Length: 428
Ligand SMILES: [Fe+2]
Ligand SMILES: [Fe+2]
Image (cartoon, rainbow, N blue to C red; front, side, top):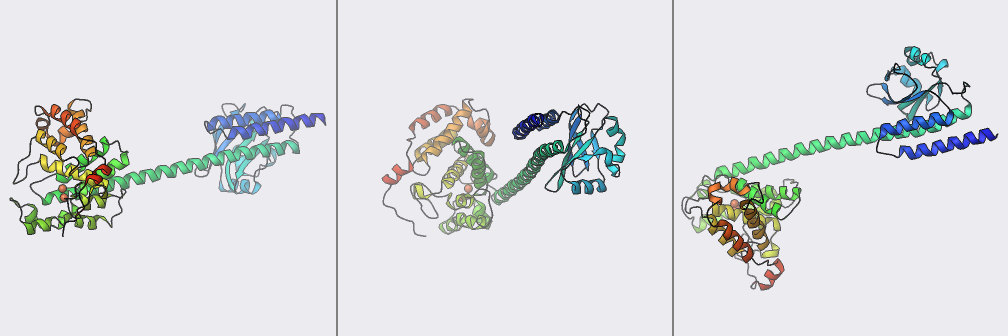
């Protein structure tokens, strides 16, 4: 009885340790190896192995082996009949010597006999074979008792659950990877579509070729300089690419007029933000503010913009960014009635209009990014690539930028609203 008690305590100890071991998520192979070690130790078994089952390949792959020798097969195949029988048997030890009727034991008979395998335990968890335990004879040479078979079952259940959990994790990971791939593909399709749209918009305007694309890139620079996350930066870039999508419905001759357009034509052109909003609204964008950027990219902080004459905090932030990028591109490209302005003048203009047309912190971020590039702190050459090296490296620009950045007061939207005149909405 005393010997039985100590065996019981030993077995319980091994079970507890096994329970602890299978929660170790770091090294699954190691977990299985330790499990086999604990099981062999608890019963006093010299030889054995634990295998994982692949329901796709219909085979066991040995994950841990002890004393079975190099010639023991590392993978063992099952036929349909074996699978059916093992599932019916469930998680209970099968005496190898009494199982010759099954094809599995006939095929691997030589290997099993050579190693004196006595027990085979199919690890069946939730009606699925997840693995198997192979056990040789006991060190004492005695046959397995009923009590020992129960311990083997209990430990086998632990090991089986550990394998099942691992399989589940692998499946979840696989699904997650597939979803991620799908998401990336959709994202790149979306971006290609956005770029195709931008190119279509730009095509219509022969004088401002590449305008939408540049506004997208300038908007991206501003958001990045503000320290926004990559998703937000991407959203702002998309908003920039699509901000003039409403121009698709404006007559070509108005867009391309080689003179300052008259009031009627101007009214027609000024519909493009609202039209753009209508076009973009029904599209499901990964970034929610894209239609708002199209609608409000001609609004100004001082309420003198259009279409709604909004003031400062009433203007969606993304529209403020696109407005700055849009205005910057208008100033730095040749128009039929107006030549491109020198970089120094543009910097001065942005600085003077900070707090009037533009949000001051956006001008600071944008000009700050420019200064970093020109001083070599930022090696990305984003501005040089978009505006040309000669243009960006004009004499005195670094001093001008430094001066401008010191000049711009960090006006907050709140202080601006407090200083704003009584609000008047323009008559449409
Ligand atoms: Fe516009
Ligand atoms: Fe524009």
